[in-house]
Image 1 (cartoon, rainbow, N blue to C red):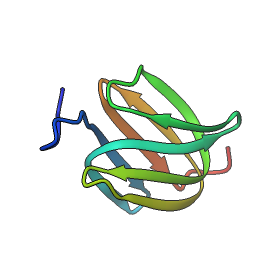
Image 2 (image 1 turned 90 degrees about the vertical axis):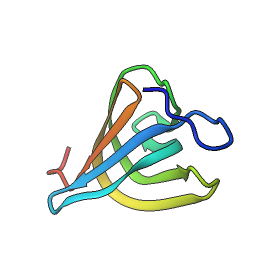
Image 3 (image 1 turned 180 degrees about the horizontal axis):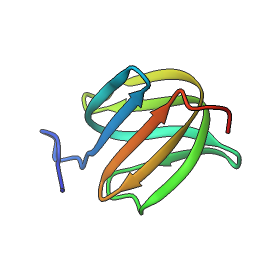
Image 4 (image 1 turned 180 degrees about the vertical axis):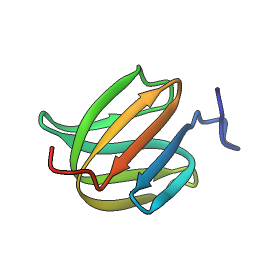
Length: 92
């Protein structure tokens, strides 16, 4: 899926899920987070990828803003231009 915003900028679908349900479900410009190697970004059309993440998630929204979410840990999975983040897991 090759979604773009009104400025023709490519987007990626981000879903964030906790034990209570889905807390975020929208198209974004990029996602920034941290794993054991440091900071990294996930951009539209990113390669398939899976990682344990920690500390925080920065969501680069379609309108150009940034939303920061503090986390303990989670799992990030990127597949076919969708990013799924699962939070509230047991210690990893």
